[in-house]
Image 1 (tube, rainbow, N blue to C red):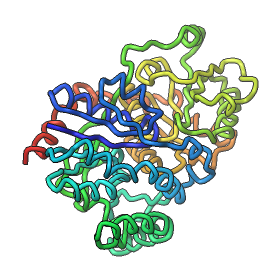
Image 2: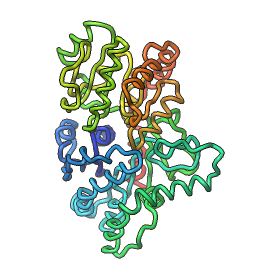
Image 3: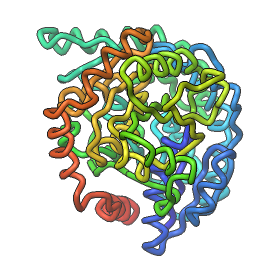
Image 4: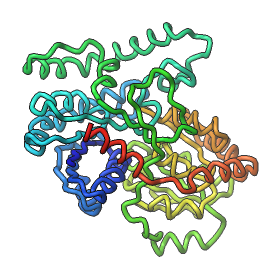
Amino acid sequence: MQFILVTFGSAGDLFPFLWMGRCLRARGHRVDLLGPEQHAPFVESAGLTFHGLPADPAVLDHPDLWHPTRGLAVVWQATRPAMAHLPQLVEALAGDKQCVLLVHPLALPEADLCRLASPGMKIATTYLAPANLPTVHDPLLLGPWKVPRWLPHGGRRWLWRSLAARFIDPVALPSLNAARRQHGLAPVRRLIEYVPAVADLSLALFPDWFAAPPLDWPQPLFQAGFPLYDPDPDAAPSCELRTFLAAGMAPVVFTPGTGNRQARAYFEAAAHAVGALGLRAVFLTPYRDQLPPILPPGVCWQEYVPLKALLPHVAALVHHGGIGTTAEAMRAGRPQLVVPLAHDQFDNAARVESLGVGASLHARRVTPARMVEALQRVVGIEAMQARCAAVAIRFNGAGSADPLCDRLEALASG
């Protein structure tokens, strides 16, 4: 069988597709992966055939990229130039052969156009986090705002449509409908209702104990576990980091995400907080210029360390709330302080708190004093550590992509 995988964004968006792609390849299928050209080393090391898509790194400096309501529009605009190539690329790869197009949800409009050249093509989409699937059921957050339980479903639908009409549709629909007109297709009125209806199969890449599927998620839907993929599973911490870890008490790790170049205030607050509390810390970021010029004693900077290798040696993880980072902290049984900025991060933070494995602090409210207070809620709290250990047990035996691949093969042959 042939599978064409399409994604964009950061490594956190790429790794789940590598997880699926490697499993499909191991089962004898042809797998082509289309993604941002800068991810070529990751894809090639995974043994998959790679087709690079143009990507502008300048988007990482856009002032609204991490805005709670305007961030999605920035991502949409940044990805459209690459997605415009999708129908032509997929037609060349698929030809008249039957195949499955497995795509990131924001690639679904272009995936829909791919059907015109390949009517027998099946489309599957992967939702990496619960917040990527709109619902009117509890627990419901719209960005950072919690929707009260007493609000009826009709009111919740109105809220969804209002937010989309203000922040998403004006950005997305003009170019989308222009492309559809060129192919003689009817215009889309609401993106939030159109996108979930495109796929023949929706995949939720998180377990039901983290988010049980409500009645209004798209069907058919297959729910798998977290796609915990490590590009170098046998990697060990650097000599510098091993020396640091052995020199004192377990540190707190701070990471705002590998794609965040706007975290200077975050690291300044972190440096103050660990100093005030007498803690040690590891600062993870590929961008050294975000850190204080001179790091305090007891703080170690690393460009990148696989979390699987690092987290067993730390006291807690402070992070942005990306779903992959959230899952890695739970697998390691470590308390986490989630500092969400945008996208799915607020919902992930709320689920961490609900499970009792961490706390949260809105990124726009971060100050040195608030960082101190938030760390005191997660570091060294025995009850939270016990809860983290209990949740970590749920990962035992998890991680196989085989059940998901079974479902994709059934879609391909159906």
